[in-house]
Image 1 (cartoon, rainbow, N blue to C red):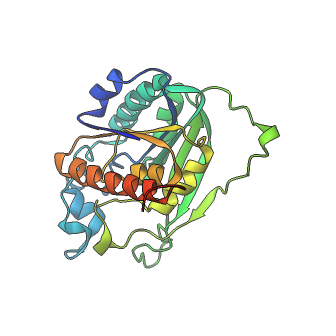
Image 2 (cartoon, one colour):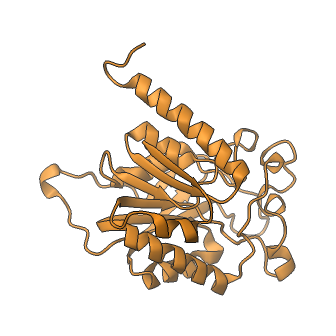
Length: 252
C-alpha cells in the first residue's frame, strides 16, 4: 500500500503521523556539479547527464540542486529532523549522496538526532573517464538509526553487505535524470522489517516505491515536481498490480 503526496517535503512531513515509519530511504538533490556559483546553478540536465541528448537529458530538470555545502547541511538537517520524529525507535535512515557533500550529510544526520552507523558504498560499475585522476565510480548511502538498534539474534538476521555492486540505470531507460536502480533499493530495504513502512521525502520517479511494492513493504512518498509525481504514480501503481498478481491465490 502506498501513500503519495505532491508538495514540499518540509511542509508535508509535518502532517504525517509521528512514530509511523520503519525506514527513511531517500535520494535528495546532491547539489553537486561545480566549484563556483555559476556551475552549481547550472540546469540539472547539464550537471548530471553531460551530452546525453537521447537519454536522461530529455527528462525534466529538478529543483533544489543549487545549494552550497552549508545550505545543503542546514536543509538536510531540517528534513532529517522531521523524519526522525516520524520514525519508530530503532528505525533506520539511509540517504544517498556523492563525495562532494558526504561530510555535510554525515553532520546533518547527527545534528538531526540520528545515531550515525556508517556508510554503504554503491559501486555503479561505470563512470565518466577522468584521465590522470581516480574515476568517481561510486556514490554513497549514509545511514543511521533512531536510538539504539537491538539485534534480533533469535531470528538469525543476515549480515548485509557494505558495498553494493549494481549497474546504474542506462540513460536511455531512465525516467529521472538521477534515477537509482530498483535492484539497489531492494538490497537496501533488507534492513527494514517485512511489511514495514518506508518513507521517501524525495520520491522522484518513484523507484523506492517500486522496490517497496516488489518486496512487500508499505510506502509513503513526497515529490515536489508535478511531472515526476505523475511518473512515480504510474510506476508504483503498475508495480503494485504486478505484485498483487504474483501473490499466491491471486486471480489470473
